[in-house]
Amino acid sequence: MIVTTKKLFEAAYGKFAIGAYNINNLEQTMGLFQGNIDSQAPFIIQISKGARAYTHKTMLEGLIRSAEEIFPEAIFAVHLDHGDEQTCYDCIESGFYSSVMIDASHEPFEKNIAITRRVVEAAHAKGIVVEAELGMLGGVEEHVSVDEADAKLTDPDQAAEFVERTGCDSLAVAIGTSHGAYKFSGTQALRFDVLEEIQKRLPGFPLVMHGSSSVPQEEVERINAAGGRLIGAKGVDANQFKRAAQLGVTKINIDTDGRLVWTRVHREYFRDHPDNIDLRKPGKIFMQEYARFIAAKNEKLGSAGQLETVRKLLGG
Ligand code: G3H
Ligand code: 13P
Ligand code: ZN
Image (cartoon, rainbow, N blue to C red):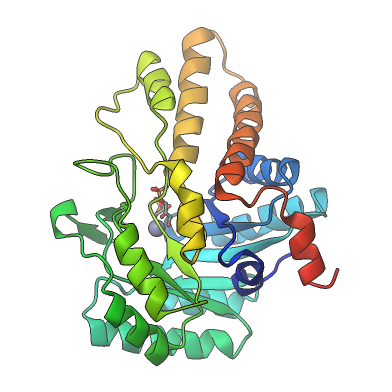
């Protein structure tokens, strides 16, 4: 069942975070649904602009509709990840997405507010909810490259004004994370002090943490042992997710860790089976491994076992 992120956040706020996982293909879609059903977790499917362009935007919709039939128990939101204004309108018009993210965080404050406000008006008119972003993460986002040195943490005072003036339904905050496999040039630490200040000014309001992959060292070592070259890759400590959830983070975005699972499975498979040309063999292993990965991640987020609670909240 497709629901809005707003409904999921009502169940989660202050207690646990919902995993927001990116998909691009069939294997990720199957593993994602299987892992969330295995761990009895509600979840958010994220679709980036790059994912929409990879095959065709309609293909992803077809995959999700089919997965919904295969896993009728599943409760999830379909969310545009890092949308620009036009892509947000396209998703709002499509009638398929239950939630969009407008990412105008690279714009000056007033322009970010103006763009976000326009998207909120269009989305709310159709019952769709909006995530916006204030502050800048380090690392690379689509069309926006920000040096870690220039990364700008969210200003708590501005956050309160931004939410008030835009009417957005959730806010992505920059508290030290960054996208990709190379986070934290120094020590691995989330800025809980900044998060606490944001929550004080926005009590009860759902916050979002992007760039939250953990980049497990064991995964990196296996990839490198199978011919990869990921040097100095580092991520967020997943044991900090629950503390973040208690401070108002209701959605935690994870994409890179899934890519690491894909890379490890395929590199090891082809290293160990140099004669194989059947794409289904590593594909099948990936779906199983991805499902296990999702279930384990949901334990860290606290969303594992929450499916029935959410179903009851929805009146089902
Ligand atoms: O934040 C970006 C997500 O990891 C999606 O990545 O734009 O390469 O699909 P992508
Ligand atoms: P990671 O690169 O840490 O997985 O972050 C993903 C993300 O924020 C997608 O919006
Ligand atoms: Zn992101």
